[in-house]
Image (cartoon, rainbow, N blue to C red):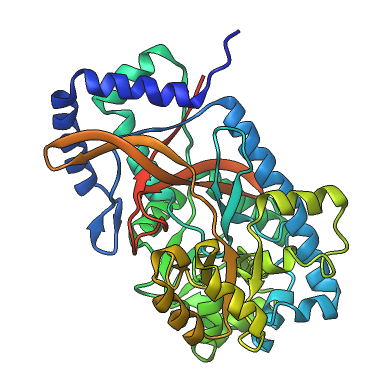
Length: 444
C-alpha cells in the first residue's frame, strides 16, 4: 500500500492547472461569479478565495485529531480548576460579573460545545503550533461550506478527483445535532421540542450564516428566530422575544460583548442565572477563549495539576506567551531589543485586530508601539508560518507561489468535525491584512 502524502497531491494539482492555464483561468472567473451570487460574504464583500484545494490525507486528519483532542483534555482540566480553585481563578483577571456568569452551570457537562482551534499545521511532521482558540461565537461554517462546494464543482478539481476518493465535511446539521444533544441533557427530556433563538448583537455577526442555520433548524421542525439579546424579555419564569418563548439559545454573541452590554440584557442574564433558558455554549467558554490562556498554560507553577506529558505537549505546541507588564523593565527591554522574535496580541479581540508582528516594524516604530500599548496585551513568540505553493490568479496572470496557511479545526461537542483554512502571504493571516479561504478535502 502506498501512503498518500499531501505534498504530492498539491504537486499533482499544480500539474493539472499548468497544463491548461487559460481554461482554468476562465473557470476561476466562473467560480468567482458563483461566490458573488452566494451567501459567502463578509463585511459587505464576497469572501476572497483561492482556486486551490487544501489537501489532507488520513494521516493528516489523525494528527490534527491528536492535537485537538490532547489540548481539549488539558483545557477541560483548566476549566475544572478555574471553577474549583479561587486562587487559580484570580489569575485570569476577569471582572466580577464575567466571573459570576462563567461560574454558572449551563446544565450540560461539556464546557465548550462549539469551538474552532486554529493551528499552524506542518505537513513535514514538525511541531505544529496552535495560533488561537475560538471558543466563543465560533464562526465561518457557511464560508467554508460555500467555497468547498464551488471548488468541488470546478473543472480543475473535477479532473483531479478522478484519481482519488474524496471526503469533505457537512458543518451545519452536525452542529445542530450537537446543540440539541446539549439541550436534551439540560432539560433531561429527550422528547422536548425547543423553540430556538440564534442570538448576537445586531451588526456584529455574520447574518448570512445565521440565516443558513435558521433554515436548517426550521427544516428539522424547530421554530427558530434570530434576535439581538437586547430584545429579549424575562417574564413568568421564561425568556421571550415578543410572544415567542425561547427554550434554547445558540449563542453567537461573545462573552466580552455580553458583559459590556450587561445593563441592557438583564433579562437574558437573569434567565441564565435561574436556569430558565439553555444557552449553547455556556459562558464558561470564556476561560479558554481569552488569549490569556496561553500565558497561564506556560506557567508551570499555575498548572501543576497537569501531567508531565501534558506539560511537554504545551511546550511543543503552544507558542510561549506572557502577559505584558509595563513595570517589568527587563521584559520590556527584551521585547524591544528582539522584535523579530515577538508578536503582541490583545487579550480578547478577534480577526487579528490589534495584533502586531515585530518584524513588520522598524526598531523605532516597534519601540514606540511597545511603550504605548496598555497592560491588556500579551507578548508571544513569533511562529514561522508554514508555507506551501498555492495558485495565484492576479488579473489575467496565473501562477503558483508560497502562501502561509492556518487550518481551523471545528470541534462540535469536543469532537473534530471539519476544517476551515485561510491562506495569505503576509506575517498575519487575517481579514485586516490578507486572507483567502481555501476549501479542505480529505483524499484517499
